[in-house]
Amino acid sequence: MLSCEDVSYSYLDRFPALDEVSLDVLPGQRLALLGANGCGKTTLLKVLAGLVFPTTGTVSAFGRPLTEDALADAGLNAAFRARVGLCFQNPDVQVFSPTVREEVAFGPLQLGLPTDEALARTTQVLELLGVADLADRTPMQLSGGQKKKVAIASVLATNPEVLLFDEPTAALDPRSRLWLEDLLATLAASGTAIVSATHDLDRLTHVADRAVVLAEDHRVLADAPTTEILADHDLLVTANLVAPG
Amino acid sequence: MADPTVLHVGQHVDVPAWLLAPEPHAPVYRPSGRRRRRGFLDATADRSAQVLRQVVLCDETAARPGLLQRLDPRTAVVAMLVVLVALALVHHPVVLVVAWAAVAGLAAASRVPVGLARAWVVVPAVTCLVAAPVTLSVVRPGDVVVVLWTWHGTGHGLTAQGLTAAAVLVARAGCSVAVVLLVTATTSWTGLFAALGALGVPRVFAQVLAMAHRYLVLLVTVAADMVTSRQVRTITGVRHDRTGRAVLGASVGALVAKAYQLTDEVHQAMVARGYRGHTRTLRTCRFGAADLVAALVVPAAAAALLIWDGTLG
Image 1 (cartoon, each protein chain N blue to C red):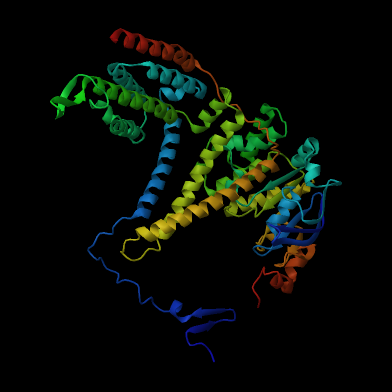
Image 2 (tube, helix red, strand yellow):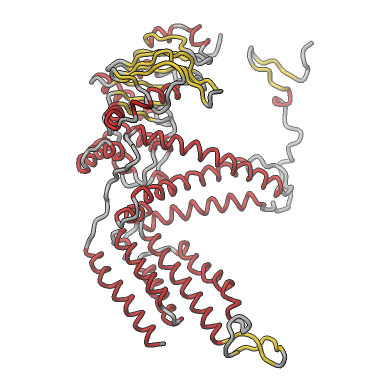
């Protein structure tokens, strides 16, 4: 579905964020991007979402090169955005519409769904996430956890084939976290690819089958099944994911 | 040789010895009997909190049942424009005062809290200061009704014409502001922005306004948090106005940087969900019986005001 090959990226051409990173995102797979703070997880998600473009290396999506030029094509852009959804770490970034209902409907409407269908889908997704009673609230009236749920709902509403999550369970209470893990597993079973950037190892096996570990030098340190990654203590220490000793 | 001021804890952390000892500079924990003087930052924090309270109060007022809350936002905006034009054409202060009283009556029927109506008094008071020179004979010659000084044997002071002009100015400003505040207090911001879009204001403009409102509130919250975080680390009773202003300056810089970063990420979040420069939004406005009544009553009331104003001369 998505593929990166030797992707490097630097902010302002001075601050490296990714260094020759390669990975594939496969249908139905739950992939975790693991790494310490500042190792490039968020940047990699944005590269996969076609929001930033690599300085060197190539990215392809659904068999075509994913470049700025390619996404300038309206048809391809719409097709790509319909297939790939990104949930930002900071829900305030994502919840920009005046009300929760409009926020969740934003994606479906931009993708050309009729208003009635977009509204019906919005209602269903809000009910799915247990926040239907917040539909007419403004973002200012939401708690951090509620905003996170609305941000997740706004991405689910476009029914993407690839779901990119930046710290998906951050700011969620334990019950909501378990519920989200179940939902992600169900979506993956139906063929949706889930990519989650996280440094939370405690619940890793519940959100991912495979993990790509990014080192603090922004390179890929390992790409293996989650259980293998978790069993390799030295690797986790090197990646600064667990304390030495 | 080991540094005696550093304690080695475990394998990784060298903690300075002072961090593990009681703070010798901490003031004694007892009342000093002196009131803490409020400074520049306290006022800023208070003001930020006040802005947030106003926003919340506005939203709550718009959501509660009331006379004007029944109106569709489009009706409310058009009615507001009709009344503002009528007020701009009225020239007699008595008519304006009556209109003002009517607006106050509508506010009461719409259950607008007193906290939101404070500006109804503040704006005319400020306008009084601005209009004060107009009352003087040196600015607006006419029949002097109160002599304040004499110049070459001629009495100068407040003129009847000047007082009338000032009264019209103050009443018109006060009444117009009251109408605008009444509509914004009884209509949700989201409804107002949607109404602007529905009434022909370019959709992108209405959307930018809506997002500006959304993120302004967020940035005020961040600013308030910044000031509060500085306050909780302010220990001494010394006034810190100068450093306070420096902190505020730095905070403004940090806020600008944060706003810039936020702008970038919000745009990315929009693009990621299919935004390509043209936005489709939900239309949530609905006309009802109250709108029909308003469509008949508001123009009639505006016409009545103008006719009465004409008969008064």
